[in-house]
Structures are given as structure tokens and as C-alpha cells.
Length: 467
Ligand code: NDP
Image (cartoon, rainbow, N blue to C red; front, side, top):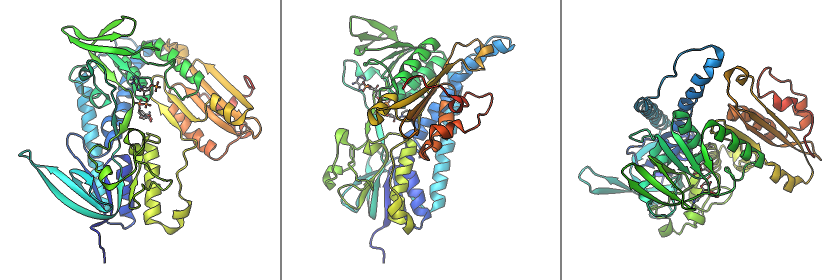
């Protein structure tokens, strides 16, 4: 006899939550999923205000250079202009379609979808608050054998004078007016991607980063190379710079920088990190341990200190990437709902997570940076190739591509692979499989290239640049 309403209650309908709910239900579990369905539909940050709309806008932005470069190939005529409203409308329609697919998949798997704000009231108890049309709220209570917290994260904006005038990545896709002059603050994925995208879409973009170089944590050579490329493409990248205050004036937002500098823009985007979305979740009342920025603390099985409650994805603040949340969700589902054979062997591995930054040009990377590899292995062999892509021999573009392989000299294993160039994410994904399988440089050398591609450089680099 079932003593709980559900076997699994998932709080949050983003990447991790949807995957866990659907896969658990497919394995016969009785699953409920709660999500506040308002302006955003199912799919969480990635689908609504992250990966997907970002990539669509990146495609939109790439057309600009395509129109420009086509002249070198004989195409004539003026470049078309961007209709911002059309882009927004078409993006919104596509996101709604994806929201619908998520709903269809969940319902098809037998998941009970609950629209409302869920909070924890006990180790097995959840309360769901629903806002009524008259502004009041109604509450329902549920019980579940297991609870999964998958509520994601939310943008973090530091305190400064005029903070109320800035926007975050949540608002960028739907700005009422296209920002002719955009200031982006931050130096990591979100800031760098939006800087490139809006530069491509035609905005005059300034990117401010407080440190020495953007993309802290990435390979240093990649960081410097990317900074050069985005600057060449038109982003006014200012390093060691920060905002002191923002004031709204008749001609736009006046942004005071350190050293008495001031710039005037239409929009200021803060992309200064994301924090776990734990507010109002009832973690304290149930006694769930939290770490920095409120992150839910979990063990290697994604179990909190309350054994019936699990957490995955951005809310645990380990690696804020959709594919990581999906993989973490699968570990939980395997642990809780089998198949039996999977239970012992399924653990999440955080090594060799490939990643791409969709700047223009893209960065694709897997494994260790040169600095990390030196620290870990001592003696490494480096291979490096920098070139102008074949396409640009006629396009007139001065864009260059960088590729870099880092090999542990003792074992000959490729331990780092990095690219800055078109489609780097697409290219690096395949090489990530090879690295996951423990490929050596000898394996790379024995692989036949596909000619003419940029990717073939990774299997034709023969002369180390330094050891
Ligand atoms: P990150 O946490 O990666 O970086 C935050 C950036 O803001 C850093 O450059 C940081 O500087 C800077 N910063 C932090 N606090 C301040 C402050 N008080 N004042 C000025 N600058 C500050 O955050 P993002 O917002 O870029 O992205 C969040 C996560 O989302 C990423 O970690 C990534 O995992 C994920 N993501 C992945 C994408 C992809 O896969 N393509 C795309 C977009 C997001 P410093 O380096 O000095 O700390």
C-alpha cells in the first residue's frame, strides 16, 4: 500500500527537474512536478531565458558578418537591416513551442504537473501555493517518498548606486527597444556571449570586466586570443574596470566608472553570476544544510542531509551547465528507481566536461588548461595552431582561429583541448568523447583528417611548440 501521494515530487521544471521527473515516471514511479507557470513555461532558464534563446540570437547576429563577408564571394547589394520585433516574436513563438513539447513529454510519461510555488514543510511534505485571479492564494499539501529540489538559479547583481536601472540576462531577450548603445558588465560566459551577440546585431557594445582578462578559469592563451578577436569584431572591451554608479538622464543611462570616466548607453546588462534560487523554499524549516550563496549541500548521490530530499542542477552550485544538470538528474533517478544494476555504478563524473562559450568566434574547450595541466602533471607537451580559416581567404574577414592540444608527456594522453573559432562547440563535442575514452596523442596522430576543415588541425598537429 502506498503511504505517500507520490514516489517522487520534483520542485522545479527546468532541465534537471524535467529530466528526473520524466525518466522516473518512465520507470514506473508516481511522479509530481511543481513549477510556477507564468510568463515562462516549462524548461527553466535554459529554454526560456538561457541557452536556447541565446543561441537563436547568436544565429541572428552571425547573419550580419555573413552579409558583410558575402561581398568577397561576389554577392552584391546593401546588407538588410534587423527588425528587432520580428526576432523577438519569432523567438517567443519557438520558446512557446518548446514549452509545449516539455509539457507534452511530461504528461505523456504520466507525470502530474502542478502549477504553483512549492515549498518544503517536512522531510516528505510539500505545500503548493497557487495565486488566484483575485490576488489571494490557495494552498494544497502533498506527501512524497522522495523530493527532488531542482529550482535552478537566478541572476546576481551587486549593490551600487543606480542598481535599479540595470537589467539581467532575464530581460535582455525582450527589451522593448533594441539597445543602440549597450554596456555589459562581467567577464564570464553570459557577459561575453551577450557582448558578442549584441555587437553582431548592430549595437555599439562596451564590455567591462573587473579583472585582468575575461573568462577566468579558461586557458590563458584562449582568453587573450578571444579578447583580441572580440575587440577586432567591434566590442569595446575594458579590463580592470568597474561601475561606480548609474544615473538615468534624458539622453540615456550615464554610467560612472572608476577614474572619473563616464559612458552613456541605452541599456546596462549585469552578467555578474547566478545564485541558487532558494528563497521561500522552506529549506531552513526542514533543516537542509546550505553552503555559500544558499546552495543546497548534497553528497555524491545528490542527497541532502535530510535523506528523503535530493537536489540537482544550479541550486547545488557545482557546475552551472544544462548537460550537467541532466546527468545529475539521471544519477538520482538511477539511484532511486533502478534498474538495479545501475545503482552502484552510476556516479557523476565532473572531469572532462566539455563546454562552449558562444562568443563570436566561439570558444570550445574540454579538459585542462595549460596552467592546470602543468600543475597536475609537471611535464606536458603543447601543440598549437593559429590560422586564418579557408573561408576568410575570400571573405575579407581578419578573424583567426586558435587550436591547442595539451598532452601529459609521461602517458601521452591528451588532457586538454581548446579552440577559439567558428563552430568550436560543435567540433569539441566529438573530441570530448575521445578524451573521455582516454585518447593519447598517438591516437590523434593515427586519425585521418577530414579535408578541408578546421577540425582536421586537431589530428594533424605534429610539432610541439614547447615542452
Ligand atoms: P559566472 O559566475 O561564470 O561569472 C560571473 C562574472 O561576473 C565573472 O566575470 C565575475 O568576475 C564577475 N563578477 C562577479 N561579481 C562581480 C561584481 N560584484 N562586480 C563585477 N563583476 C563581478 O557567471 P555568468 O553570469 O557569466 O554565468 C553563470 C553560469 O551560467 C556560468 O558559470 C555558466 O556555467 C553558465 N552559462 C553557461 C553558458 C554556456 O554553456 N555557453 C552560457 C551562459 C551561462 P571574476 O571572474 O573576477 O569573479
